[in-house]
Length: 98
Image (tube, rainbow, N blue to C red; front, side):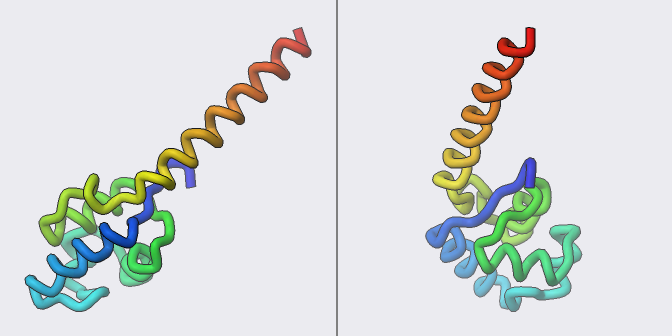
């Protein structure tokens, strides 16, 4: 996914605590409504899979947790490195074609 995030294990623990404080289950309809998402997306969130950035932020906000404390920073760094390598490769190819 182009602009997506996934939760870290530590982040999931924070969200779990906040969810329990609200007495919501992991796919509560009220949570889906407040985060403008589906149960399937909440399940992907809990599985540590990448989901759209806007939805990730909304899921965290709905339970009152700062998304920056939840996100897997290593995944962001790895994706940035991949994009950087890709851009470098494309720029080299452009020079060859000119």
